[in-house]
Image 1 (cartoon, rainbow over the protein chains, first blue to last red):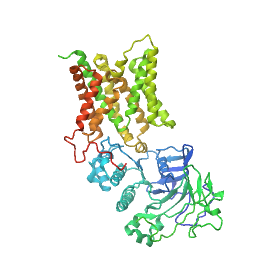
Image 2 (tube, chains in turn green, cyan):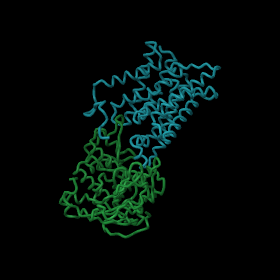
Image 3 (tube, chains in turn blue, purple):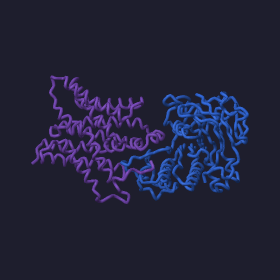
Image 4 (spheres, rainbow over the protein chains, first blue to last red):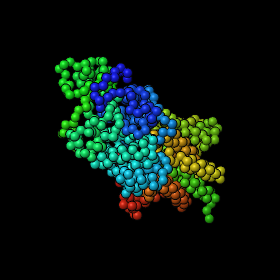
Length: 324
Length: 276
């Protein structure tokens, strides 16, 4: 359960490790054992990671696993109930929330949206709109945009202010597949050009941006973390999604052996229920009897997550994913 | 030739309309119409307390309205009942407590109708000073608060993440509302304040391409409603406060007519975009 009890790694590409990829001094924001509690229930607990300058961190996890909560805590929108969040002084954040509804009564053009939280030069606005491909919509009212266009407008707004840390909560939702590739490309370009840190929440449980430095899988806690690089290089994957997509997206393949129920209890693979999520309680796969139907090709990492998560990182088989 | 009291009413009414226009836009954008009503209703409790404790009327109304909005914030934080239900409780309890206190004070005779519906024809020169002085103060504060308040209106989380302190702007906004209610009570009355906030703003929406333009238009439309309503009340011998509201409604209805629609997307009452 604790961070320190095991450090044996059997899977090179996916490892549960407390050691950040970069030196801690580069960290823009660091979460230390952060927990958020609402209505007597922990939404997330023991979340521990940092985002450094030039680093792309992607959060994945099932619905209700605390991805948005974690991102909001990282930028101070939510206050942690335990643990702490350390930010560098004067950190400039650009934020794209998951949901945003703008009341019809508010007349707001895309252009006006750009300067919502701070003044910008018109050249900066035009550049941001052009880079997200919606320069022609500058004078359109945001309420008249399609979902994908609105998402691009929000991204343009966040990048136009040249943030140190870009936090994108499902930035490609509602965007079609080729648009998704283009936006991920743009996010990569922004990172490479400005060197900002990026905290990204993926709307897909398995697909992340290939440029991601660290994938963090949440399920009320950090289940596992690793890099997606290895998978995106596989020829099978490139055949499935095409070379261009493979340069942009990667599959992060893993299984959870338990589900967090809405009432806070944990449903395990063996059908049992527990109040807490402990690896030692015998409900997790490592404690399963031999007749368990565990998939044979998985690589179990004892130090992953809270110690009970099964992680498999296997070569992708064509047809395995229904996405394309 | 117009009487002095009528000129004073025009000056005070136009000043009030200009002040409440931009504030009313925020009430509409933030869907706070019921909240405005609640604060206005609490003004009667302020009136009662001012009589009971011998306080200045406006100060007392401002303090009670501000307290009610803070109480609402506290109750919202506590969770449980919806904001709607909380507002209903606060609104009618403060109005009723005010009426009960007034009834207990048998030694004072107050013009209840005057407080409920306003008495714009009775404004003094001192009232004009307060309306215009207070109005300029409110508008200046709003200009300074504009960016954070607008950002918090669009999305409090973006505002918070990008360092604009939405809670603080919300608090300031509530104080401005309390101030405007204290100023407006005498002119349009407790029951009609919200209409002066909302109707001009709602009318302005259709003709506005930006939040700033909508704020200016709301002020102008409110001013036209005040002038039209006052002349109407003079002409038809109708009560002045309700006449102003009727004039505002007439302008609103006229604005719905399909003439001179703005732009290719200018359908004024199409439902809000489906993607949010």
